[in-house]
Length: 527
Image 1 (cartoon, rainbow, N blue to C red):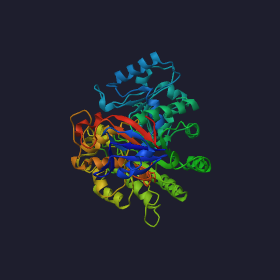
Image 2: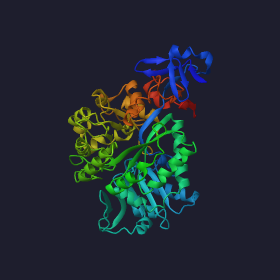
Image 3: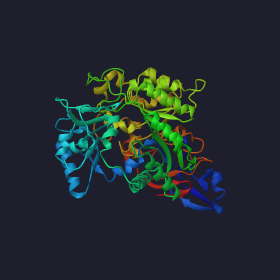
Image 4: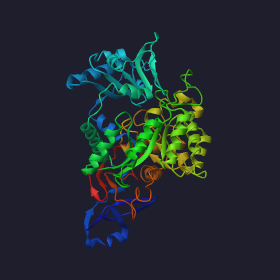
């Protein structure tokens, strides 16, 4: 029997709303009066005037890490290095650990000396008996204690391609690792079990559903647990425990690992288009603005000795993109700095079919941009996967890092939209919380959530319709599913959320307060 949702304010398209939806199996089959004609043959659900929008599609996050972060040692509240140490000590008092991993510290929030990064000797004050790795909030810089360095036999001669093992004034490793070297220090922490992966993914899914996210494009294939991630997702799917729609973004930074994937998991038949899909090759070209590892064309304004880090050489980037294109695989590349973005555009141009970006190769983050780059991205229809929530922190540093001239043309989400660039919204969770309403608030107001700084480039503020569309049908476009996901229209999947307030009329300042009352995926209430 069909399900009729009625008496609601249901978003259909820009300035278009209806009051009813008719759902059969997992698909919307009618809206408005056509839906209500089937009232006698349907199960009725009274929306009681509530606002309904398509389920959010977070087009770039790390779902398993979200689940892990919910119970791990959170460092987001650290106000100083001393406080960071105390958080670690307190966590070990209540948790029996053979290794300690924490994430979320940000030296720009330290109230003592925010110019100094924590080092191995700071973490040694927590413990010298077990390995400890604390990752910066961006994930592009991490610090390990002396035990972690001992386990990995780190010496002054240790070198990691595309990353740095930093040293002190005497030339000794100080425990700080950047970019590709971050993956290396993570190996000091014992790998997760199959049960750990399933638990973390399940916890991440539940957190996403509570926030109205019905689809994720998730990069969980990141480090040395490649087979375990694939296995856990297939296990959840086979048990009907994969409640969310999951689209892979797998990171292979070298041809050896990518070729292994092409010969193994790429040929796995247990994928479909609706629930668990193979997805895209995710590459890292540079790092983060906060860690000053984003690759700029010019030196940093507040650190003229560096212009960032290239996590992947141009030669390696070209080779990986070429191989992906030959196998019909989309590529999305993390590129924050304008230097990295230049390299990515050039690499993609070499793979275009008849000058067209048919594989929809995209840029993740795309933050520090010039006007000419924005026009080129739009001309090539290169999708951008952006995180408006990054404004919450970056509004405090972007002018310092890159100077006012380049800052004025950066985080240009509205310009890209108006130029016709395909755009999708994401949070990069757990770098930021996956709460979509905080993300929408930053996109619409260009202001941070709490501090009085900003707005950042207010001319780049998006309207509510463009912002919602970027988070729904825009994200669906990035995964080639815009013809059946992201809209509440006939022949689209019945993925939707019911809100406690009207997102279209509420004060902009109150958008972060909105809560999700109900979440539906494929015609089934999952929250």
